[in-house]
Length: 126
Image 1 (tube, helix red, strand yellow):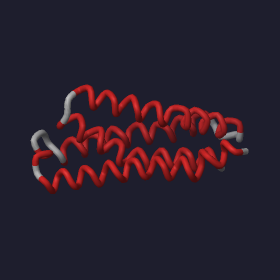
Image 2: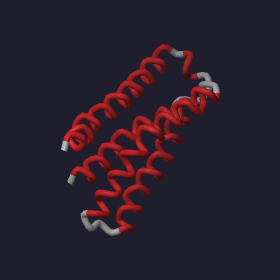
Image 3: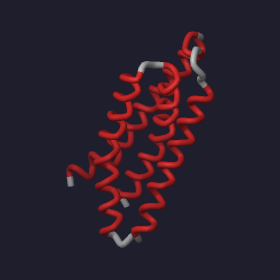
Image 4: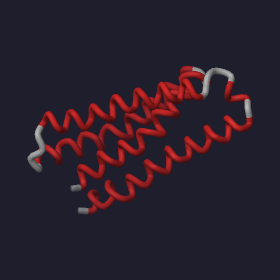
């Protein structure tokens, strides 16, 4: 169903987002980190709520829904830790690190746009 596809899209999008979160926790000021966290929350929360509501209406058990979102929660934590370990403070000064970080951030934005275009927009038109 569309609800599962939205969850899967958020899962796929959460991988680069969590990596960027870890990178930002090491390399920038707190305002950039806070802005990114708020942006990710505002982008994902409505999708998560509508997806969960649709899953519940289709008969998916509450425990299963919580387990699904729990995997994203734990996975995001691991991704942020991996991002922070891969790009320690000061690594943003190397050209190769800057290019890799830009690629990860681009992947992050592209994953979100793809998920919205493939699942959220068709649902909005129905």
